[in-house]
Image (tube, rainbow over all chains, first blue to last red; front, side):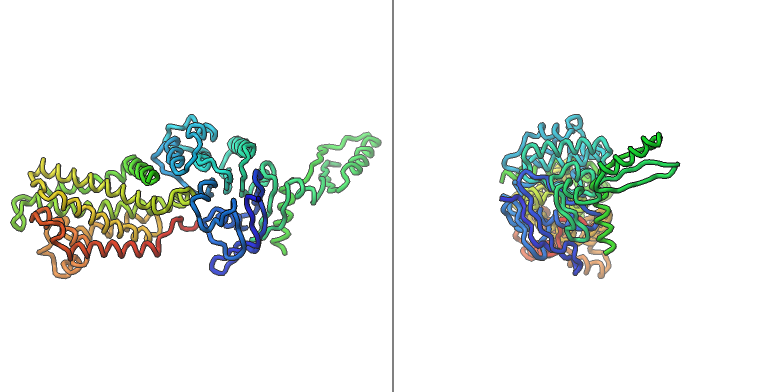
Length: 283
Length: 248
């Protein structure tokens, strides 16, 4: 059984359609990325799956539940990291985890979770003394303490420095290794590319592309070759990099010159994404 | 039930850890009592001044702890996103709210006990003889004023404004209802306003029990008014209360 099934989901606020008929499924153990610019409907979609909002139309099933009914059995099995939320400033990191652990029937060991999210050194520190990145890890810790099988992460690394982001990615990978199903929203393309098994690109409430990061990239621009000649940058985009590169280098060797700044680069998800977003916005 | 105790313990810990709130909610009425007790002496309406002031402060404590405490706390938690976050856990909304109310009740009970102890020790006010009735009075006050607190929390829109709005309601109400001394000499208009406020009726009940040694139920009309205000508050809250912060 799929962990999440969404079909023809629509959501309007005061006549304004934020989500315009999207469908996707997420399989158990999969990391599914919802990628898109601000206002694309990512958070609205996730908040419907979490049970915060009612769909205007369409079908949604999460772990076999209708999330709109917000049953306790459903909430026992999900973990949520919201885009913005704070916790009690005067409780310590450990106390906060213990409070959340108390809400679940079979919580994980509190100290183990504090350790897992890298806050062991801060276990006794009041929440108000944490940095932004540490608070985000606290959010992740309290989402994990109930030992959920399905995790929703709404922009989990926004505001992280590069090192903290790498650490968070490692953590998310280790959760995946534990067999957790993860739904991740992000506007960081590298994040989706690094973490997600499959990505849905959401633009203005519609899914414009869906597939594994490799599929999304493969179905597009191909490879980019750059070099400098006579002080001018030359950029060649090609579907046949081997042939083009061979011709270029053969020519240079024959002429006895060096191809300055030679660079061969596969398109990244970012290129695909920008192409998609621009295409949609222009349409 | 386990969840209720867990949440009650959490609420208590959060309350006492927050020194500013604990001082405003718990200490402030006691401090006011000490100040007023130092300036009034002799008798008021045939009762020792300290006893009359204590009854007024008992009422102020109910409004301050249950009404202001609940309203400010819920608005701040809502705007911080704590309430929204808790909604995705298995903790039922009803359990959360009842634990928050019970926690407030616990603070109010402790405050009332300290009030009587201070009154006895410092100003020689008399020890209440109808303790059972007094417990009932505490419950009536907590029910009535926390109901109004819930409604106020539902109507306040931002965390920054919450304590200002609450104080604008609380202090004039306390003044007009006689928390700080008898209202007999107030202008008619002010007395008329006082006549519709729940705190006026609550103080009436406290006085009947504490000063006159009556049973709590000797004032059914006043009890009905206090509880009706509470019920009206719950109805407003049921229609208007949101768990989520305003959209950013």
